[in-house]
Image 1 (cartoon, rainbow, N blue to C red):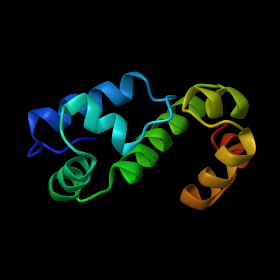
Image 2: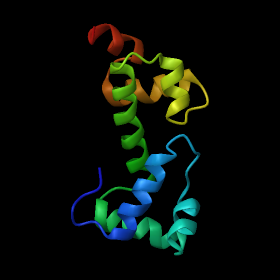
Image 3: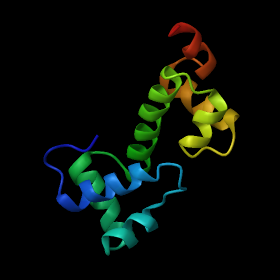
Image 4: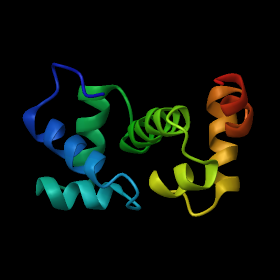
Amino acid sequence: MCHCRVSAALVSLCDHVSQRIAHDWTNADGAHILGISERSVTRKFQQEMSLTFAEWLRRKRLLLALEYLASGKSVLDTAILIGYDSPSAFSAMFKSRVGVSPTDYLLQSQ
């Protein structure tokens, strides 16, 4: 999901986050990993990705959710795997982004 013009540091952070996608990531976590301030993380993401860190994380989680659901994982398992505390919170995010609930998505993909 990282663009080719993205710095090696940001690519490394994206990879690190992707490997532990269920963690409750914050800008502070990114700052700690990169050894820079939270404001610098915010600025780097905006400049290099044209997204906030939070938006990048939402999109990354959504892409993984689509993969998990398509591979047969349940809504509950998918929600937990991508870092949501409840299937209802995951379902609300999913529906707002995809336009259908995860259950309806599963039915349409069969």
